[in-house]
Length: 238
Image (cartoon, rainbow, N blue to C red):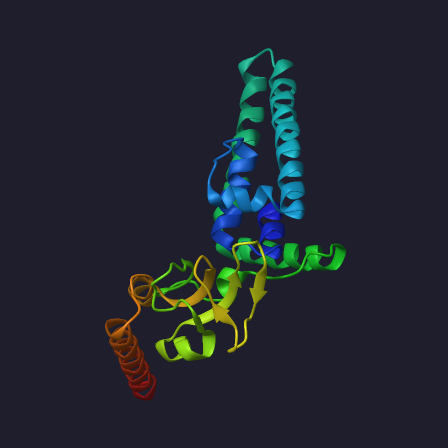
């Protein structure tokens, strides 16, 4: 499970998502969530979990067979006790290995090195790279006619001054514009991929065109500037 989780992390999943999907595969739970769709639609992730499910089933059969063979020849209690003690001791050692954070860190580093060395999986933990925590997230914004952001070039929106970065634009026909330029027009029915603070997204999503939208834009810039000033004061105090 750990090897599969590390491999999934190397394909771009966050650690929490990768570990959850590895647990789901090894237990056969099969949760139907958007995270599961990210695994199913990705050929490398799908192959990793396929092998994990196969090995999990084979491992269960091996465990049952080993337990049967361990105790099948023990006719007396004196024969059972040493084998039972060894079994409990082995389970205790495995439990210590499973929960010890130093062993986990060592195994994780070793697995990452082995996967990088013997596979072509690229190391891209996007959730960590984008720091999707502390109020920051990636969000898709559906652009409707009459929205403040619609029917204007990207440079005129000045979203960066609000602390929002446009990562890409998905056109209705399926065309995707990654890292769009300032001259790129945002049109109705576009889906804009944004990175920034969650509280800024909710206000932008409901912002309408006109004077009220322009005032909301100026207020959002002022709020972001105030946030930057407070952050600078905190860093200076440290």
